[in-house]
Length: 218
Image (tube, rainbow, N blue to C red):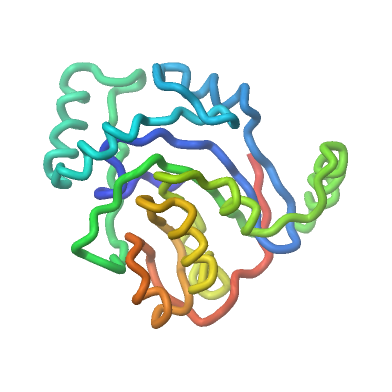
């Protein structure tokens, strides 16, 4: 999955959601799986099981520079840090920044979109039907956002057909997350429209195409 962007997240918890876009299939982690994967968190949780980093910690992070955040990660490394060698994979660069003077801080809500696999669609569709779910679109993930969330999306760098949001959904995310933002390892569209909206956004490229069908796997 996409590694954490340099300014996105001095203090965030990843929500492991793997949904899909238009006319494709859906795979998500259960509440129990989320709790198990984030068992070291001592914070309260959202109803779906995601750790809820306290607002006061997010505000403290807004006063930190990228270098200060990075130094904190390095201290965790030198002290042993998290299991598996500390916080060594928390940096990614090469993004375009919509508003360079705006800091991006929030609770990471992670989403991974994968290329469609017609050979496994029928199996995924059957499992989806068992859960009482119909065909879903990228709005499904966006509708799960909470105030303070940063939508972190792995589209494997896809540009043509990999435009997660345009100006309408960008506005919706801005109003929903309030102080959050978006990071896309892929593209966005309607750059002229979103440039006037004051929400932090990191993305690889811009493209006029709409997002095309993909699906997800575990």
